[in-house]
Length: 270
Image 1 (cartoon, rainbow, N blue to C red):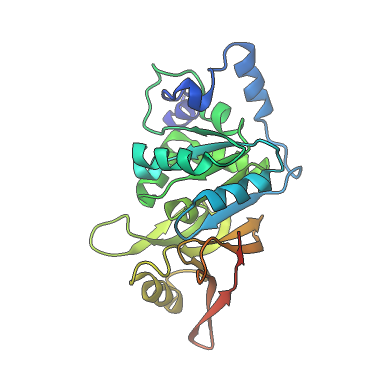
Image 2 (image 1 turned 180 degrees about the horizontal axis):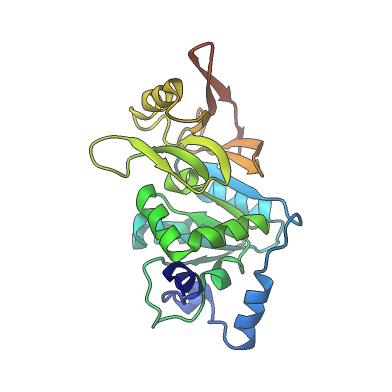
């Protein structure tokens, strides 16, 4: 058996019962695997991103997108190396909402839990990805087979989303601070076509660097988001532009007649 195949089917690390619920065993595990089989063309594929700050307002909107009265929302903090601080913030942001929050570590040991990636991620209604180091996140997901399970979750209509590394990860490529010294290009999952730049108003180098890459042809045209502003996609179509802060905006950045074209996408407050 190849290592990737083994890791996809392997068990995942410990998560407190209050966070993830009891382990599935025997028939329950078999049922979860059966339920995980692809059902192409039966669900609307949904992704909600923000340039930074996936707070209570965005979580509330994500919950609404699931169509469930009390949706299960799982937090995936791979990019932050499973930071306890980020996880605590997620639970605090969920506290005012009628949701069932959980989290799933990526730094795991098979001796501590008996649920596979598919059993975890295909049993929830939404998955929020943390900010952090996008390059490391992508490497871990691909080594563990999490990327394939997230694709299946997207195809099944489970709402995906996040901010910063949690927004960048869904695109073909984007600008990242995951390497030393300077912003660089990172290749990601490619669920959403084109490129992405988060923190567009919060970090001084983001806008000029993104425009330079697109103008030169080194990066595909795409979407940039200020902190606290975001975009909801169905498949690859923009369905709504939203913001949790006055003045925060999103942009479509492209090239026309040899010049950068930055089209402002005015958001609705959520």
